[in-house]
Length: 195
Image 1 (tube, helix red, strand yellow):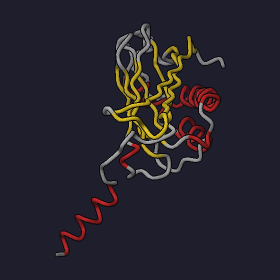
Image 2: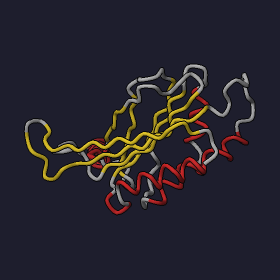
Image 3: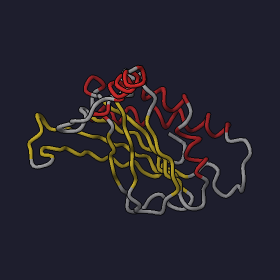
Image 4: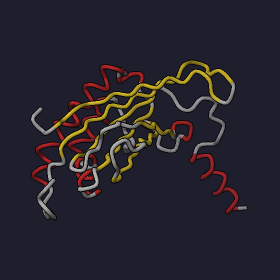
């Protein structure tokens, strides 16, 4: 994996109780994050990002997906998402370049049987910043019970010339989800318009 990865960090969160009430079963979220050298670091403004996208993104997608599936098998995945955080010397576009390509996202999506787009964030951050990885249901994008966020931080990343790229999954929606899906709202609003 010669793409400048300094380290990989893994985060597992299990929720047993929410709002003072036990969950029906533990809810597990897994995040796998790679910390790598920004491939455009030190070059000034780079007009064509494509050569490095083609070199880095597929390898990164395959490695992160392999590691994540070792912790949560594809058949257990219900929600998924991705994030990139660029160090202060980089452009947000550098993080976007690595995660907003089908060569990265499709590896993950296909491995877990997803059909929805991968929810995402991309930002610039200092080492130790709290990072957010949003998720949606892997096949039903309007299923609000699966609008989730995994939060994580890495004490020494991203460095100024680094990028954190992460993917995450959940084996369930929120504990005790009690709000309607988007589709229900749309149907109700459509009915209201017609009456």
